Image (cartoon, rainbow, N blue to C red; front, top):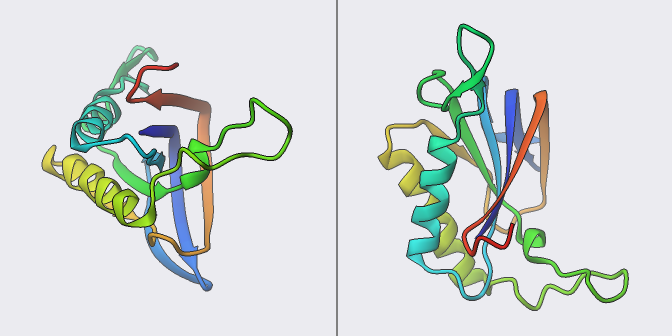
Length: 149
């Protein structure tokens, strides 16, 4: 699984012009599920996201995780994170999980985040979504459960 994690002062996701998920201060997490991903990958990614110390403490150092900072998570499924552009300019999505498997792993990731006591809003799986955010810092972190980066 792959994730793009952004520290935000606010983020929302709309489907057909209606807000389906929204948070204030916290993390926007774009989640990509690849074919070989399993429940352990979702658990690993959730643990990383929940534990990322990318919020400032009283001394101004990035030393707090989203729970310590009192934030929430907005998780949005994004299969394009499993795209491969090593050859040519048009992405190949051959490594992206089939929708049934991707939905199961995405929902498992969300459940893992919630099991850590975090409020987690979501987008709508397989819908055309419009995501809005205000990235604070900006702070953006890339995660990969296969530890490719």
